[in-house]
Length: 144
Image (cartoon, rainbow, N blue to C red; front, side, top):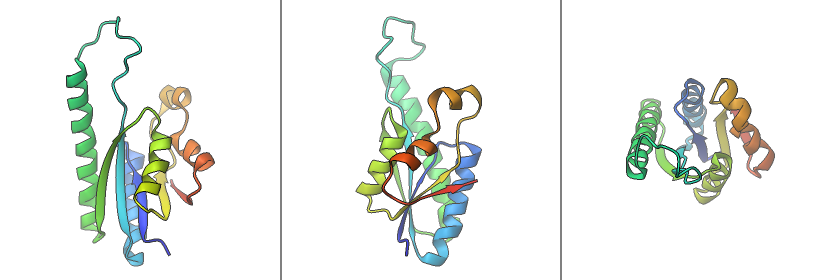
């Protein structure tokens, strides 16, 4: 049925739980997990304002954070006995990146947390899960 499952993670507690749930879901199917993390590129819109870090420092920091998230997810999948591939993508639109990676990696389904960010950030930024649900032509399993 499902052979390649895309699982986005932002490192939040809910997305880590979704990776665990996806690994449990994938194992009896013999499916491979494609775990991805999206990093936001440096914002050039306010270059005149004070920046505490350079573009290079920002890229290094967000790349290192994404690599840590992906390594943690990889360990979860391996411990569950599931084959896993990790992908890091830079994008201002996580939902678009998720859908693009599902297509690029030949995934059959997207398995994602119900939400990641909490509080006002989630309200202002909108739910990436909601955006994926409304724009994806792939089946989407929302993990709570």
